[in-house]
Amino acid sequence: MENKSAQAGNAKHGKQPKSAPQRLPVRRMTSAELFDRGNEVVIEHAGREYRLRLTGKGKLILTA
Picture: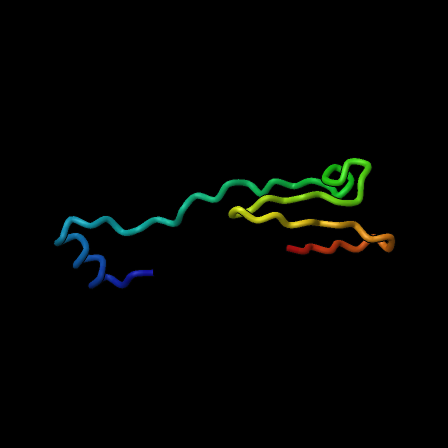
């Protein structure tokens, strides 16, 4: 949060105070929807593949 003197300084230089970026709603799904009858999904991120596996004990493991 900017103080009043910083806000006044911004006004003198034609700058508007920065507003917080709008957040999109979080996409929510169940693991059953994600795995769809399997036990592994591949996630592509920044040119790499990650594997999300569902173990026999119901735990999730993410590996690169």
